[in-house]
Length: 400
Image (cartoon, rainbow, N blue to C red):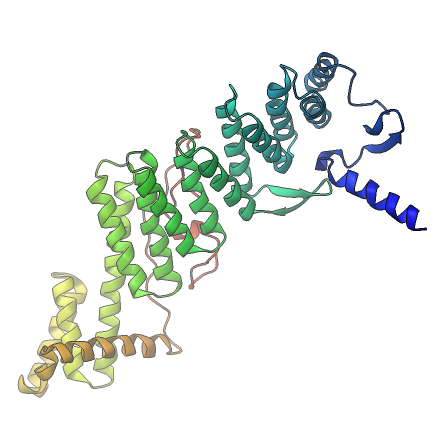
């Protein structure tokens, strides 16, 4: 019985070493050849010579049988590693797996090429293949489990892009990979890590076009945070990031979107000030109300809100007199802190009211149409494109 168990575990271990797309193949053992694999038609996939194995792989490829073509190329490089065709076969194994939709296995094959042939002629092609696999997972492709498509994997996308940067940090694919690692983190709902990834693009590759894309995206992530969490500090950081973007990249195609986002953030902030002013007015804390009505006038000169604020200030002055509305000690530093605390408290209390619908949702310029150029990273310009997190008002990537 123990011998039978041992043989079972040996066979199971051998099966675990076989690529996922070979799960349907039969495992056989003979004293002459050891463990061998046969496909469903009974044909032994490994020929006696590298040239014969290459012919077989090419026949499968020509017939469009990418699963068996990938296996045949892989077996060539595994069984004939010293062959002049081995390196090319390793790359072709990845290409065939990718063509057959087995992206996880394609990534493994491309990664094996980079490891085994770091000075290979097709190193850049293997990197490109790996990058394309990462894009598939980023777009929602599912990983396979036991030969079946099981679950989408942003974690796998992130791993692939980070591996490109680690393996070839000075390649043409590295800045893009670093950017898309940030995109994967966004999709995983990790905004702080995504921002850190975008900042790596700027610090590592400051002269690459992707640096501008990353700076814009930092502002966008903060913009979404400011909406979903009603976070004033995130709104401030978003404004700073967009201002930096406009200062450093004034000729970018995203200039209009950045300007619209800044305007939306400013309107959002101004609306908050109006809400706070009316809150204190309703509570009959007229001194505080006048302070914030004056802020509205200062922030939005000539706007309807500013005109309404001035009218209300005049009404209060007529009713109560100037002395009753003087800010008094709040002109001091301690008083300013007290005013800010009151402002924050007003926001909390206002948001808790049953009739409070939340701050207005900013409406940035819609993203441009999708581009076919693989080297241009997408930039999100509408908060509705982000999942997760979802905006708080209404549950709902990127433009190219």
